[in-house]
Length: 143
Image (cartoon, rainbow, N blue to C red; front, side, top):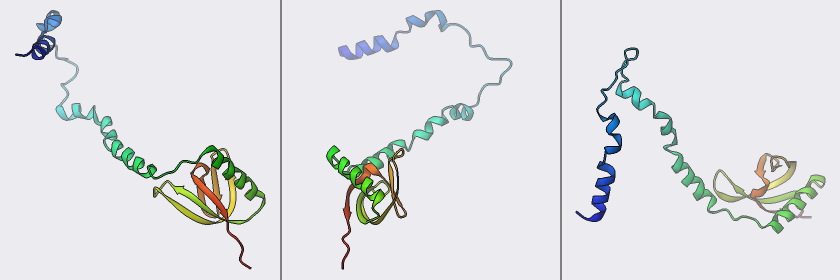
């Protein structure tokens, strides 16, 4: 046997630390029946809820791998544009990251409201996180 196996055998097969309890007879409760195997397995059922968690994380990671994060300068520009649009109702083209699809999308419409505490802007029927907005462009009126 090599040295590693000898060390493992000594560590895992040495039961001398438990000699004081090795020969104590098993005490079966007179009040409680022994738990059957199915009930014993149910004790660990809450951990089964985490089974699909890694798949969900991997799926969201794939979505966000396509996201381009804005710089602080770009964020300041977007904030100024949103503040301006609050008082000037103009039709704009919003390029934003859609959390549901994992892609950038365009939406053309008017700014309806801004919820600064939640960090969301509502354009017509679309509510989008302000940090997901890549750009806001004015749609020029054609005469």
